[in-house]
Image 1 (spheres, helix red, strand yellow):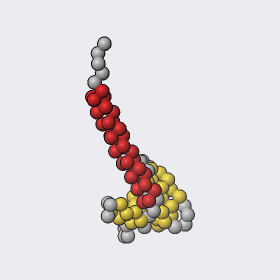
Image 2 (cartoon, one colour):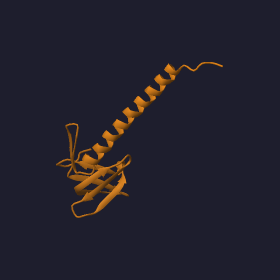
Image 3 (cartoon, rainbow, N blue to C red):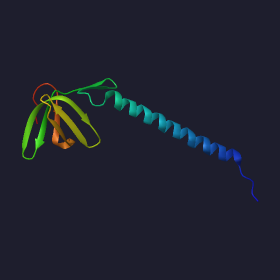
Image 4 (cartoon, rainbow, N blue to C red):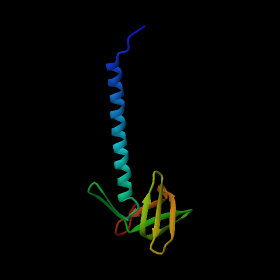
Length: 105
């Protein structure tokens, strides 16, 4: 019967636990950041501001220019609520958020 190298096993378990803790800490930080900064039309994240007050929304063949009250984005979708309460939820490629003046292509 072979002897088990308990020092090696302990080292491997310690490394796995350490990596798991690091992943958990980054997960908590990411979640808190999303809760704190997500869903506001004026977002601030690491000294970077995202202030949008207008959006171009593509619906079929027409493009609307709307005033933004609130916006939020997920992995592939973006939701824009306008000043009059209309909600647009679509793929990110169909909405362009604009700061201040007009958007130029």
